[in-house]
Amino acid sequence: MVPFGGWDMPVQYTGIIEEHRAVRRAVGLFDISHMGEFEVAGPGALAAVQRLCSNDASALAVGQVQYSLLCYPEGGIVDDLTLYRLAGDRFMLTVNASNIEKDWAWVTEHDEGRARWRNASEETALLAVQGPMAESLVQRLADTDLTGVRYYHFTRGAVAGVPALISRTGYTGEDGFELYIGAPDAERLWRALLEAGRADGIRPVGLGARDTLRLEMKFALYGNDIDETTNPLEAGLGWVVKPAKGEFIGREAIEALRAGGPSRRLVGFEMVEPSVPRHGYRLLRSGAPVGQVTSGSYGPAVERYIGMGYVPTALAAVGGEVEVEIRGKPQPARVVRTPFYPSHAKKV
Amino acid sequence: MANVPADLRYTREHEWARVEGDRARIGITAFAQEQLGDVVFVELPKVGARVTALKTFGVVESVKAVSDLFAPLSGEVVEVNVELAKRPETVNADPYGEGWMILVKMANAGELAALMTAADYEKLVAAAGH
Image (cartoon, rainbow over all chains, first blue to last red; front, side, top):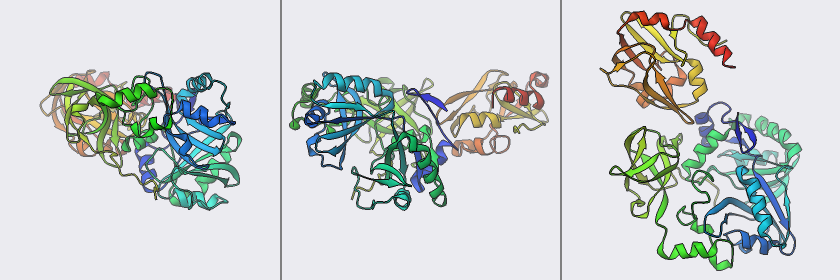
């Protein structure tokens, strides 16, 4: 157990690699209740969300989810989040645990009285069920048909008798669900899922494997790969920035960057020889420093040593050669196509 | 019950040494591999390199951590476990057997006396709040 964002969290239950492989081959269960949930409601809710977030919330149908960003006026990133449309005039933002206080101050300060905000983080628990067996497991316990719930959509129902918002989203690249429930019900649902998933080989999964799973998908982790000093374009997140939808905080700064293109890019790379790239290690090109590793590890499903980092745009093409400085020695690496592991999310 | 074989000697940094004639086989303990988690990479010296008691001779990396390896004894490396380059997880699966790291020709067998016995190492591990 380690402290994380004010919470006591397990790094692993049985072993990071075993848990990682259980998610890719069978099903894993994550307690991610530490994450934050804000609700915003009222006739001005859509306007408030549109002003704060980079993606186009007006494109969301009720029951639909989108990935989005909160940006600073200079174009840096406050947080990444998923945005849920609960009703025509009601939305939920799911934010990173480490940013709950910062994000809450941000949205309430910049709302300008448009809507009613509620911080539901303390009362909301969140369990994720991810892997090829996830759908059949959750369906067995659910009182509503889940086969019709498409990727990045959600429904409401009961799972093992626990009322839940059942969202077909996740941070692993596998099919699965994130279950938003009342905090008092968390333990009951946790136990029910572990019991019902026993025959599938379900494993509880900690933060260690959560990190290696998202790394294999090249999903950004706030604090590692994106932060207030990185802009969405260089981070490869231009696809969730929709300037045509209207004004939002950071829009002008980001559009100014789009014209010339970002000077650096977040790339995925793999080591040529076994060696472990880690956050903070320098990236070199022919011995000269060109950037930094933002995330890196051994990828248990791809069975390679992989990482992410910022390099000058000129070096960002697939096949580009760089070196990772590990304990003072430059270790060869090459920029590769990402995700490192193919997505198995149920996109059709 | 802690996994601490009685016939080995131990360092405070959780390495073990098994005497084999004038040589010592060296690795890390069951406690060490459990604390580290899944080992993904082991950096070891080349055959012919010299190691010095209480100084680092390599690095063991798990998913979450990088740890120095400290030599229990001084001497010349005569064998290196090349299996660990292909399957570093052997350190977790069999830390006292197939997970051995280096075989050293001892420069001074007197250094053995400075190492902990199994009984003393077991006390150390217990006190570490295991």
